[in-house]
Amino acid sequence: MNTRRILLIDDNPNDVELALTALDEVATGGAVSVASSGPEAMATLRRARDEDRLPDLILLDLKMPHMDGIAILDAIRAERGLDGIPVVMLTTSGENRDIRESYAHGASAYVVKPLDFTQFREALRTIQAFWTSLNRPPRTN
Image (tube, rainbow, N blue to C red; front, side):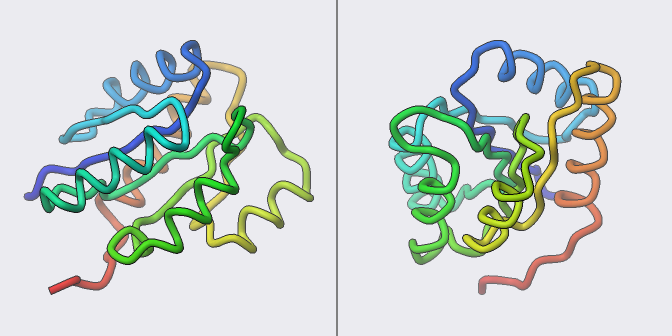
């Protein structure tokens, strides 16, 4: 089986640490990269595209300074070669306005971060299992 890659885009170091711990516990069978800003995320994705090592999944926080999750999502969806990567919004906001806007801009899914670590770990386990194991995206070649 191919190595599965996940890109986590989140500016909150505590949330990143929790997500990395949870993803490590759910044994992704691959690599998890982290970007803490929109420009860093886009540079990481472009480099990964050039090296033919795109992530199988992007976990994207919504509320970030300078370039929020919607702007990052727009940049991903607008760029050839990146536009087909599943992007799961992983955020603390459960507001309907944020959910609708995320889907309108091309989010693949929207998940509100559970506050309890056990529930958070289970949510990431489910997300990871679906998007990197069960889901079958179209072949690019």
